[in-house]
Amino acid sequence: QVQLVESGGGLVQAGGSLRLVCAASVRTFGTYALGWFRQGPGKEREFVAAISRGGSSTSYADSVKGRFTISRDNAKNTLYLQMNSLKPEDTAVYYCAARKGPIFAVNTDQYDYWGQGTQVTVSS
Image 1 (tube, helix red, strand yellow):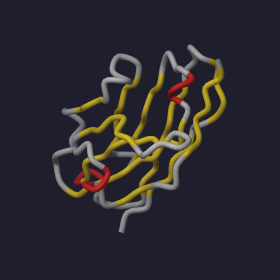
Image 2: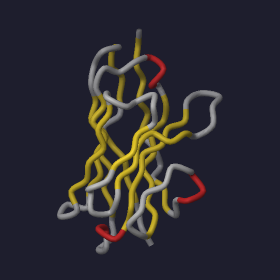
Image 3: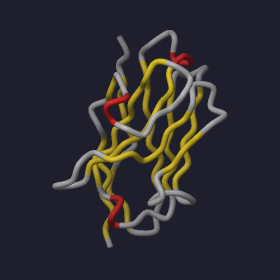
């Protein structure tokens, strides 16, 4: 069983930055590919970014490419999402997710474990 806990959300002005953190309680953290997803008001949950279990491969949604950076520290069982140049349309609840295996995925149904989410609000 994998437990994921997100933190780092908050209220920020457009153009600002936030760093989200996802802490995992599992000894085999390095065997899981990880992803960040978000769900805005009245919207479906959507893919944001993903990273392979070793951290060498990443993928981003077009809407965040060049502004967000996903990374992980397997020694600390931690996943990060650095968000820069934030826009009001980035407002959402952000979730981290984990799936067993080396390859990341971009669909919600391909992930086995989810955190409870952290709210990010970007004001204009």
